[in-house]
Length: 547
Image (cartoon, rainbow, N blue to C red; front, side, top):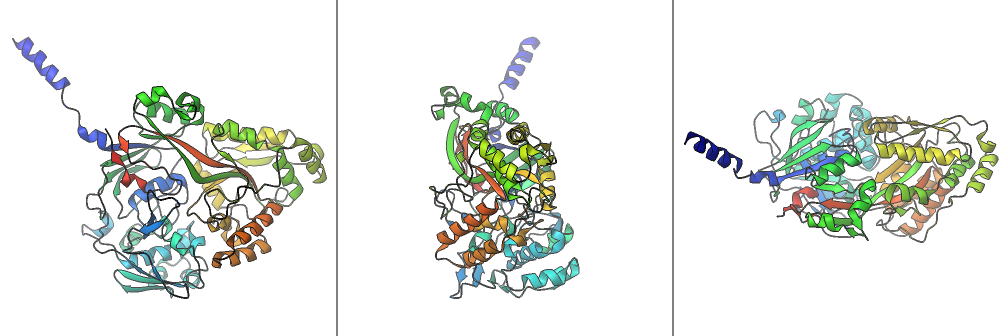
């Protein structure tokens, strides 16, 4: 009898109902190391995945509308812009609560207009080393004066005011620009301008690299830059509560490991790795085997694109255009596209990506794969068959196998005309550090658009954005700069100005364009309302639970 009872107890314990909350945990993978969580510094896709879950901005992009359209998020309405197009009156929503944080000393803290001013000042404050300074440099009245006066003095940072940033009341403030800047509205949807309370700035000594004090739908519960991050739903969120109660990010750098974890149900959404493409896709559709397992497919263009960059201050690479042209003609871009995207990417034909107003699909780049021409150009450059050239450093963006393979491909291509390169493998944070310190010479480069406007691409080539800004090529051209000044304030004839600037860049050749990204994304049946985007980073709150 005792044996029978014991057996029944074992059966009952083994048939215990599963925890239904497990289905409400969203499991995702990070493909690269996280460099920072500071909204003033974060400027890469990996950190954006985390930052936008906890931190919010005045405006956000509509989750489903294409072309992309902005709408209020922390703001109560779109800004009121005066006739001069230089004054933005912004009203924010009332009663928005911050996530609990030690800097608040156990008290509830609600969003105030001053929190936005704090962040604008952090972008300008030199010790912050903000990657977003370019966004407001020379645009907001008094911001450069503040930067120069404050220097590295934290007391002056707190004390000094910016003439173009005016508090009307706790829920209203005004931004005054030096001259019209039509893209300002996009800047207010970027994490660079997310609000930060002064209490947090003081408590963490202006170092928010591992802390996020936000108002978003998810608050960070645990963070380890070598492993990942765990978020939990913020129950006092001002909007509709997400259906997922937790979001678990695991750092999984290798494609094959992510693929196996996805098949095992340990990752819910996956950008399909190239090596697994043909086992997952049949005639452009998801395979029958995966479909029967409840796995779904979304094909989506992105606003991400890739190229090869040169340091234009390098004494040889940067000063010899014929050499750069020879390299451009030595790279088989179509073969690159086949090997590393299975032809899912689109061969680049312009410095602008598709989806940006003014992009011309009929444009043609001034170089193509032609070894004979490449050798002729190299000879004209003064280095026949590469004689007399040193070995150049080529930097990767990660230590992943794919990054190594991409670098090896470039190495073999240029070797065909006698050019030797040495591959330097970097973790992604190390790559970003080298870029911000201007220590790159020749590298695989790319950009994920911050907003759908050509200005966001072109600012990568402005002199004022030399490192630590995003112009890690040190490219500088007076004609380009003058055209950009017209473009940034002119809402008319922008396409014509875009064409002229592209001509200048192609003539100087700081970049060799490769391809425009396109994603094949797989996800499990537990997820509904999934709309992929190359621009929206805060979309997890819109996901619904499937069955």
